[in-house]
Structures are given as C-alpha cells and as structure tokens.
Length: 228
Image (cartoon, rainbow, N blue to C red; front, side):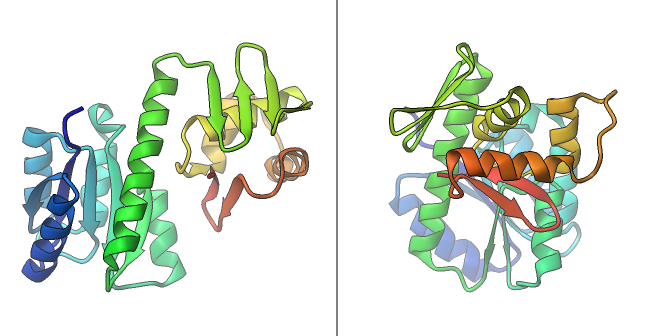
C-alpha cells in the first residue's frame, strides 16, 4: 500500500518543520502550506488523506478552510485534525461542528499526535470498507451484523430494538466521526419524522445499557461518536 499523504497547514515555520520531520520519519508523505488559501490549492492538486490544520492563520484561517473543504463532496473522506494553542471548550465544539475529525492543542507531543493520526487513519479505512458495502463491523469485542441485524459482545448475543440497532450501526459505521443530533435524527428516523429533543438521549441511554458504557461517547454541545 502506498504511504498516506498528510498536509500540514500552519503559518509557523518551526511547527511545519517539526511536524514534517516527525511524520516523514514514520513513513508518511508530507506537504505543507502556510494558510488556508494555500492549503486548498495543495489539497486540490495533491489530494491528501489527512490534513493537520491550524485555526489562527492569515489570509484564510483553518475554520474557513474546513468549511470550504466540507462543502465539496469529493473530499468527504479527507480527515481534518485541528491544531491550535487555544483549549477553550467553545473552540473544540466549533472545530467539530464544522467538520473536524479531531482536535489537538499546542504544544504538540509527538507520540500523542502520531497515535491520534494512526487511529484516525485506521478508522478511515473501516469507514471506506463500510461505504463499499460491508455488512459486518468488528469493534473490539463487539460484533455487529447489518445483514442478520444481530449484535454480540464477547460472543454473547445482545438483543436491541430496531431504533437502537440502527443508531448503533450508524455510529459504528464511522468510528471517531462525531454525528450531530440533526444527522442522527435524519438518518435513523428520517427527515419527515418529528420526534422530541430528548428522544435521542433516551435511545443512547438504552444503547449504553445494552452494550456497555465504553463505546458511545458524548461530545458536549455537538452530538455522539463511537470509539473503541
């Protein structure tokens, strides 16, 4: 398999050099850009698998670049990891709401960064496999069969009502992706169904009760994601 392509978009040359060196040592192909405008240009020509994107930059910041990126369907599977010195909750929420896949604060620790990147890339491959028609998801000791509509944990059958199963399949089909409440309502209940705001909370609680608390994570102010 060819090396993954990673694009670094940051206006600080020291960070560009540090990240480029660390990532190339791990076998990644790396390109750099100094602002969002340059980043979009490189992205269109080079088509990276993952972008490390600073938020505060001149000309075009990372938030605007991500908005533009997510408006193009051809780049749906490109991962975006935001890099920022700010660690306020609202910054994290905003980064995820506009389509970021992860959020790492500066100063950046190499081992943590590499671990998060590799985990995201693994999840990306799982998501692509699901998009190509896979009907079985294996996540840790959890096995989910869409064809048979069955769930097993450590070999033990878990019976789920229809909506809980559909909710689990949606979240588990793209591990690490944060699904907003609106996305969940539309994909599980459909755009024409009107349900109360607490409906999803009730189903999430029942789902956690059935499969355990460690798979479905709450992203405060945004929605839910599946991790293992």
